[in-house]
Image (cartoon, rainbow, N blue to C red; front, side, top):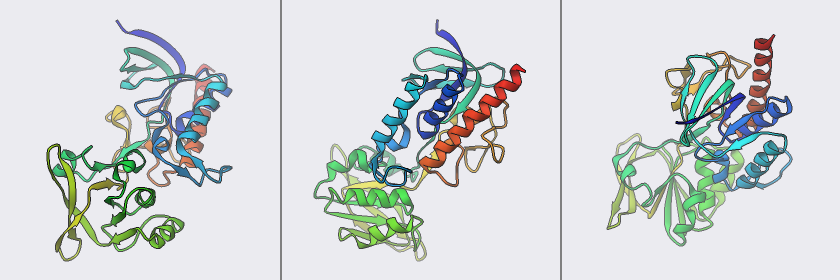
Amino acid sequence: MSDTRHCRILIIGSGPAGYTAAVYAARAMLAPVLVQGMEPGGQLTITTDVENWPGDINVQGPELMQRMEAHAREVGTEIITDHIATLELGTRPFTAVSDGGIRYSADALVLATGAKARWLGLESEDRLKGFGVSACATCDGFFYRGQEVAVVGGGNTAVEEALFLTNFAEKVTLVHRRDSLRAEKILQERLFRHPKIEVIWDHVVEEVLGAGTPPGVTGLRLKHAQTGAARDLPCTGAFIAIGHAPASELVAGQLELHNGGYVWVRPGTTETSLPGVFAAGDITDHVYRQAVTSAGMGCMAALDAERWLAEQAG
């Protein structure tokens, strides 16, 4: 039989949104319980240099998340290393069941489960994941010392991955389906002036090429976005950096979603389509997707939840 426990406010997720919500909820004396999920700290734990966090000219992503976690603990948050497997939002109090067999009931809920890497959807990509195909340069870049690698994408993540990989690889080729990048201008400037980086414009990946036992990536088969002409790009590592998808599977069919799976919130708030359930960070933000905006939304979620709980008590 599973253990059962009740809390005033349950926070699911442990990135900037979750930890900030925890700090504010603890200061409101709500005794928050935070379940970290499968990746404690979220996407920033696989990010190296963070240069746009106010007050830190340069900070390592894992260090920033450790500080946030410590802050949340210090003010009274109970932080649990576990993963929520199911959510039942049909009745109040809401019920969450973890992989560890704990059943939580909560008067209010903050969803801060973030987003996860988006893939190309190719059979060859799936077959070679872990054998040369990766979505995390900071995790796997070390294995490509002196080799030629490719990065697929055109946003901030892709450019940051390409720049990071120059610390190890002999050559980095960025493949983008358009003729211009979406990344911040300062990142583009660094990319274009780096001697190890080449950009292939207007091409999409048709297949990840691989051979051997165990298998390994040998290249990418590319197709010109306008002409359809094919070409092969030799490389031993392929890093996919085409964005992220919201981790909203827990609430699919229970909350209103939009824009491809992001949790809808009432404009100007973190209120979802279900009273008592609030959402913050990348699970709901399909526009900004920044650590600082996620933290701001975490603050909003805790204040919205505090206000809502007070109304229910009154």
